[in-house]
Image (cartoon, rainbow over all chains, first blue to last red):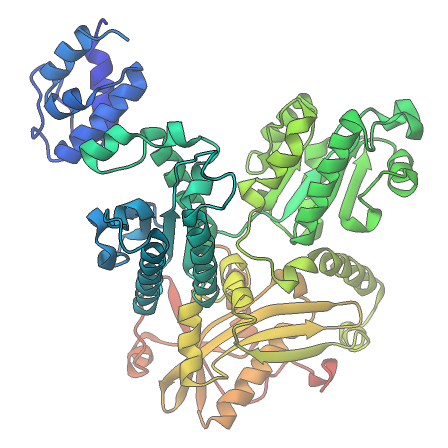
Length: 79
Length: 534
């Protein structure tokens, strides 16, 4: 599927509502702000699932830890 | 009101940590999935392990409740795999254990008013197990719920916490045609309207049943309808299937005026704020007009299909309450009495001699398990005649009584029109050997105008005298809504205290809106004891 970075940025803003999301999110990864810890990462993945109507398998849940990982996974995703 | 919750899940099966969380800025919610706590070993037998586990849980909840009197929500799930074959002949062991557990928890909830139980399986039922749970999340992040399940859980928690802080709505304002019955009575006549045991008529009947159930719980019912009033009363008095009767209503505004105008007038006559009203009308145009004119009132966006109504009304959060007190059940009668009282008062000439003819009787009642729910409810609901607007919990109220059983009392009022029930609360404590501190006094607004507040003060002065104090100190905290209670202190011959005297009295003022007052123990200047019997 095609991925819009602006859409991911919106989701980041919702999930990490206490952090300032930089303009360019392409290189962001887990740990870049306090809220994005392992629980934050889990919340982020659940939010992406809901908003983009996708489903991550266990393997993806364990390995996706950055915007780049996320984009690569989503681009090769087919329902 | 707090907006945050600490959701504490049964931490990786550690049963003893339950309820140990203490967070000053958030409500604590414990969530237990029984499966997390059961050991995987096949022995001893499941039912034994279950009942051991439940006993531990009840112990832990009790310990938590003894430690802290803050709102505590305890959620539990006994979620079970359903097997039609295994469950066809006998009830599952988990279900058996769950029923026992729920009963034990209910006893605790009765004892600790701040404890609330949340049956998570029932809470998630409308979503269904498949959508509410997500096994992947369990293996990945040790949470059994899906995102959707979590949202549903949090929404239930939020409802409980909100109701714990805010009272339910008070008045349900109803339209008539196509709301209480099908069709337009003015056009179709008594025989033409739909109301009875078949088809849509049955749905209207069930809707009325639900309305009456709410009325029994203390919701006041009123009509706001564009109709000829004779037509409406004809249905109320003569239609065989009509369940609601005229006496179920606290007021009826049936004419051709704008509904918003009528509802505003109703609010004034009942002396109840419109933000505690709920408006129910099938007509979207009327709804829109009312919503526009009275945005602070809830106008229900009712579904166009009437068969949804009974369940929708039944489950409306705005009217949901934890328990129903005797006062709730008498609400309609009490407000009707208020009408009669205002009517007689307008006809009488001299106020005191009129008041004497009403045969008032006041009574101060000590706090006990049977009335503490009412005391807490009064603290929650009373905004105008309330010296400090402090929302005491049951625990906090019991603190006063531990010192002296007369230090926290409920006030009950009866007169020849009605038993008004428990309408006031007084909390006092010793400030120093000389001084009794009136920490709070509140009175339900519907009984104002009867000098009852002066009768209560008379009794407080009496108590202070009997206990050997020399003066009474009063606190007023301005909430923006309770100025009437400041005037009350002044009318009871209290004087504001200067700052330095304030310190000498050792008063710690926590609130910058607080003002201190003081009076000696002389009888009230402007109160004729003869108004009250005994």
